[in-house]
Structures are given as structure tokens and as C-alpha cells.
Image (cartoon, rainbow, N blue to C red):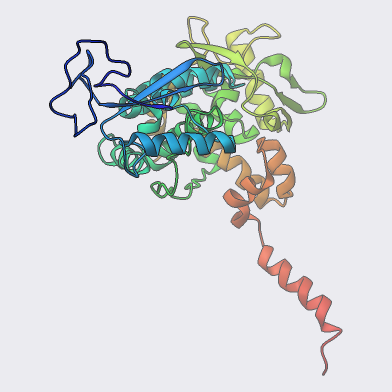
Length: 396
């Protein structure tokens, strides 16, 4: 027997008085110390470690395993036989307690850990932190996604990132046996608009460099001339630049960990790369080194105090004033310099596979999706090739 009546004694003692409320005919029930306290029916079982577990229910008979003891017990036994039993105590684990367990299991870079922890703290735990894992339902998740957009005002791309972290945690909970199924089913996310590729002319790039303080102007050339990401440009050091081979090795970037900028490896293995060094960039680097009297292995750009650059500091205090002074649109970003590098190379006939490698894209598909339309005369070359192949077979 695994179902017990909490309100009545299994073994009454001599002299005990029958329960007036529940005794029927010849069936005599004797009240226990828990009579009318909490739910009446209790299911008991032992977990895989042999420890006894129990759960109380308001009803004995019925079909709902959440409220009926017999239905829960039958489901538990069937699931155990199939090897699918989920201990309901695990399902009641608060999300905020499981999330750190999941985080510790991941092989994330320190900068990624900081990003994930920030999204957990700011956007995920406020919605789900106090809820048991099994209490999180798809409708609740969909409402949370809507609130991120309508109430919090996050951009669709950021919402996709935050939701991806949450969904990964719930998949971990499912894999670890905390859940029977994930609530991240048929969740609709806001539509992410395609990236707008803004291209700067050479004159605009040089104007932007001139609009920055002398110690930072070289960054505009690193973005437009080498296609470096902002963090990669911040972390480029002199000993990664080889004037003899006219190549630049990209193997480090500046990231912020514990609110401090530090040098770290690039974001993906594909980001470790060698990039051609144009003469105008080398000339700019030479002038920059002479201006600041840098030692041979120095990082090219640091603050006047000698610290590495932080993205937020640079964007607010250096970039925004510079684009205004150069007469560029107010939403011009450092990444637009990278777009300019790619488009200029493609316009001059450089194969898109090479451009993809120099950009450090994980897949050429990313490059094609962003810049494929910039490949010159692609449609014309396709027509000529097909005409040449089929002309011989065309019957006059």
C-alpha cells in the first residue's frame, strides 16, 4: 500500500473514539493528530537512493495526478516502469537555484559568463527566479517574451539572445531530470530585421579618424582597412603587425570581466586569423607609434592613464563626438567600418571566400548573407556562363 489517510489512524488504540465526520456504517475511522490539517491523502514511495518520499493530495480518487492520490500513484508507478519517473520535489526547485548549477557546467569563456550572468540578473530571474522549474509553462514564457519587448523595451536581437539562454537552461533541467518536458515550445520571438549595411567612403573614414583625438584616430583605419571588430582593434599590439610580410595577426581582443577591460582570445576559433596590411594602414600605424613613442610589443590604443579601452567609454566619449564632428549619421557604428572593409574588397573583385576568412566569420554563409549582394556583376557573369554552356545545344 502506498496511499495513506493522514486524517485517520492506521492502528487505533483501545479507548480511541471513532471519527463522527468520516465513519460510515460498520467502517470506523479514528482521528489522528493531523485530523483536518492539510490535505487528507498521502502517497509514499522511495526514490532511487532508497530515501522515503511523500506527497499530499486533497482527493483520493480521480484522474488528475496533481490533485488525486490514486492518479498520481498510478502515474508514478507507470513512469518508473518505463524509466521516465520525475521526482516532483526536483520540479519544485526554484529556477534561481538551478540556473547557477547549469552555469557551472558550461565551458564558457569568462566574457560569455559575464554576459550570461548579466542577462540572468536583469531579465531572466525577475521573471522566473522564484518559480519552481515545473511551474513554468509555455504561456508564461510567451508572456515574458512579450514583456521584454513591450515593457522592458529590449531590441528583438537582444530578446533572442536572452531567450536562448533561458531555453538552454530549461533544456539542461530536462536533461537532468528536473522536468518531464521543456516549456520552450512554439514560443514566438519578435522578428529580427536584417542587418543594415552602412558603407563609408574613404573620405568619410579619413574624416572620422581626423575627428578623433590623436591617440585614437588609428582605430578608424584598423576597422576600415583591416576589418577588425571593435574589441579586436582595441587589443591589437605592435608585435602582431609584420611589415615584412604585410600581414596582421588577429589573436586577441579586449573584453570586460568583472568590470575591468582585459586582453583575451577572440570570440571563436575562426576569429584567429591573418589579415592583409594595406600601405595606408601601415603608414597610419607608423605615425601613431611615433606620436605616442610606443614600445615594440605595446597595444596600439590605450587611455591616457595607460588602461585598456572599454567599449562603453569609447563609444560615449570618443566615437559619438567624432561622428558628429565628421558629419556622419548619428547611428553610425564602429561595425560600419568593418562593413566598409568587406564591401571595398568585394567591389575590387576579391573572392568572397577570402573576405570571409579575413573577417573571421565562422561560416561563409554569414558573409554571403551580409555582403553577397555587393559582389560585382555576379548576375552578368552568371548569364554569360549559362549562355556559353547552352548555346551549343540550342537548335537554330
